[in-house]
Image 1 (cartoon, rainbow, N blue to C red):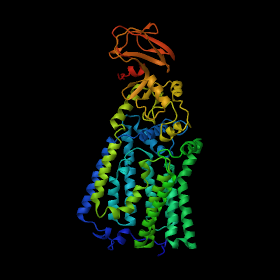
Image 2: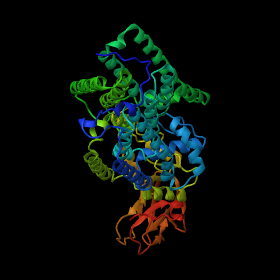
Image 3: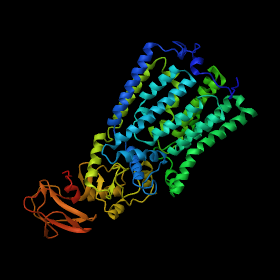
Image 4: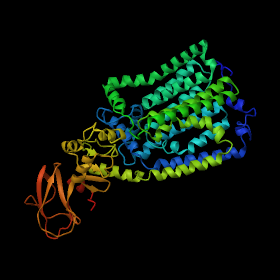
Length: 566
C-alpha cells in the first residue's frame, strides 16, 4: 500500500483522467467531450432549469415552507425567534431572509416570491458539485454529475422550496468543494471549516455531518498506514485545528448576536432540548439497525479502498476516498440515529455522492439513470398531492389578510397563515405531536384561543391533538379555506320555529346567517338587526318563519366577504 503525501498538490483531475482512465473500462477518456455529448448535456440542463422554474410557481407548498416564512415574518415585525415565535431550527437562514421578505411585503403570493431566493442557492450547490467532481475526476464527470443532481428529485424538488435545507446543503457542499480544491493545507482546512460552521448556524443536524467526518477519518486511518505515522498525525492535528477554528467563526458570531438580544438560552431550549426526543418517525429494532450501520460502513470502506488503489496520485486518492466516506457515513449516521427523517436531510449528502459516483454509474450510460430519475420524479409528484397548490395557499393568505387586522390572532398548524401571530405557541411539527402523544405537553390550545379571543383558524385540522380538534369543530364554522368563530345552529331546513339554545365559548361580535343571507329572528329575546356582541355562556335564537339552515358566525368575517360553507 502506498502512502499519500498530504503536502503535494494534485494536478487537475482533467489531466490525470485524460490518460486513458476510461469509465467502466471502455469508451472515451473522462475528459474527452464529443459534440453530441455536450449538446445532450446542455439540453438536459436547460430542461432541468425550465422544470425548476415551473416548480417555483407550481410545485405544491410544503407546510415547512410556510413555517419558515412565519418565523422570517416574525423577525420583520420585531418578534424574537424562539421567545415570541416558535422555532426548533437554527436561526441563520431566517435572519438572512428577513430583509427579502420585508422588501416584498405581505402578499398572498409570498411563497413563489421567496422561492426565487432559493434559486441562487440551488445553483451554488450545482456549481459546488461540479467543482468537486472536476477536481476529483474531470470536467466531463463534473458536467454529468450536475446533470444527475439537477434531475434527482430529492434535490430538485427540495431545493425549489423555501426551507433551511437549501442553504444547509449549499454550505455543506462548498465545504467539501473547498477541501478538494487544492493542496491539503491548514489555510484550506480553515476555509472549509468556515462553510461547515455556516452549516451549523443553519441546521443543528450538522452534528451528524461532524460525526460522519470523524467516522471517515477513522476509516482512512485504518485504510492508509502512512496516515498513522507521527509526522502525519501532527499534520492531521494541525489541519483539524484549522478546520475547527474555521467552524467556530459563524456560530460564535451568531451566538454573540443572540446573546445581545437575550435569546441564547432560548436557542438552547428550543433548537436542542426540545428536539431531544428519540424514535419519532419510526420504531427501530436496535440490533438490526446496528448491523445495517456496520455493513454500510464496511461497504464504504471497500469503496474507499478501491478509490485509493486506482487513483493516479496518493493525494487525489485520499480526497476521493474522503468525499465518499463522508457522504456515505453521513447517510448511515443520520438514518440510524436521527430522531426524524426528511428528504431535506439528503441535500448535504446527494451532491457528494453525485460527484464521486457519477463517473461509474452515469457517464458511460446516462439514459437508464435519467429515466429512473424521471420515474422517481413522477412518483414524488403523486406522493405530495395532499399539499396545497400555490394558488390554494395564495387564496388562504388572501382571505386571512382580508378578514383579519394586524393585531388579530389566527390559529394554524405550523404557520400557514404566515402574516398573523398564532394564539398557541407550539407549531404542530413532528416533535410537538410526539410530545403530545407521550404526555410531555398539555393540550391547552382551547384555553389559549379563548384567552386571546382568536376568531380565525385554518379549515384543515390535521395535526392538532384530539381535544383541540374537538374544540375547533364545536366552536368554529368553515368559510372556504378558513374556520371562523361560530357554530351550526340548525343544519336542516325544517322550518321549525322552536327556539334553538346554544353556548358561546369565544366572546366576540357575531351574526346569525341563513343560506339566503342575514337571519331575521330573535337572539336572546331581542329581534336581530345586525351583528351583536355575545359573551361566553348560554344563548337562545328564535328562528323567523321560513328560515332553514342557520349558523352563528364571527361578524367581521361575514362583513368582509366570507360566507359559511353549508
